[in-house]
Image (cartoon, rainbow, N blue to C red; front, side):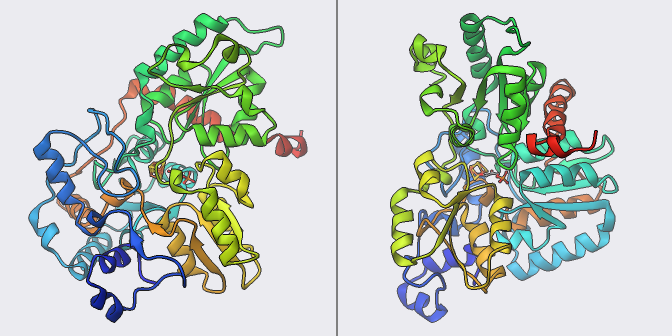
Length: 450
Ligand code: 13P
Ligand code: SF4
């Protein structure tokens, strides 16, 4: 199977060219992309944003989301990297990595394009990548082929002697940008006025803040400072258990869907999960709804996972009777409810690895990962629930050209695009991250040796 990028290039060609190239894909499923601009080099968007003076997310799933004014903009990639052929970039990256040896480690998220991941020393989900950054102390540079919040986390967990590099600074996350520190602080003040700040008779404080890993270091620091914690999609239930042992209710940001899906699976009724709109007093909720709240959900979402629908699941079940539908918990609740299973990217990988040969999977997560799984596990039929190819706009911003540029920079002794979290934020963020890394599921605690 060709990579997502190659497929998008083919889609934008003429019909005759497509036939000649034998455009591949799951039989019977459409071959169109949500945005023809995905065939362009990401540097075209760096330039457009620099000229307009406003940041953006670029083509793909988050195209319609509004990037806040403080979103980083990438400077201009030197022309030689824009002009270089794929083969040229590949040999430059291979040569730079060979010369740098153990001085550099390249980490890659599952959602990156194949053309970048082929150079990664370690590929994983955001939790695994955070651990990898923590455990690669031999490398002086960690080149993070993921998105901004992941690189910030890597910087906070890695050693002071290491630098973390994000090859394209415009590789942010539109969901992470949906919650900022001033709005969360304003919400927190409203909640304090409503619930007070004193613990109950069991010592549980009124509210515990929980931030998804997909958030800025400033919000992780807010959680560390206010008795809260970080979670990822692979440990959200464990983290909520941790929070309810210490608090009467949870403020969960920025992803409403992960919060709702996780709390619902723990038995919390959806009526006790008010949605907090930061632009409205009381988040747009009645005093009664806030009285009854067990988890207050921030109004954020992922535009990649918002594309999955119940209708797509119904269609997959018609087209492939017996299909196993596995979706990411960033999908809306009705999609998770209609699926057979929901779990993090690593959960999806393990579900496929553990399945008997000849299984059929419809997957609700980012297309680069789904297509890669389809190629890696040819004994199964694996396809994306969404028939339209619409990658994560910000993961797309990293291209082999930027990887070659930062690696060759290191060869000259230049650290380009370094991500540094100010120590004032890093201290409290680490508190919230370490709480997450130490949190154990209730079951595991029950069997742990005394
Ligand atoms: P994982 O934590 O499953 O890697 O997901 C990160 C992400 O950004 C999903 O959209
Ligand atoms: Fe952010 Fe969604 Fe992209 Fe993940 S897939 S990095 S949540 S925009």
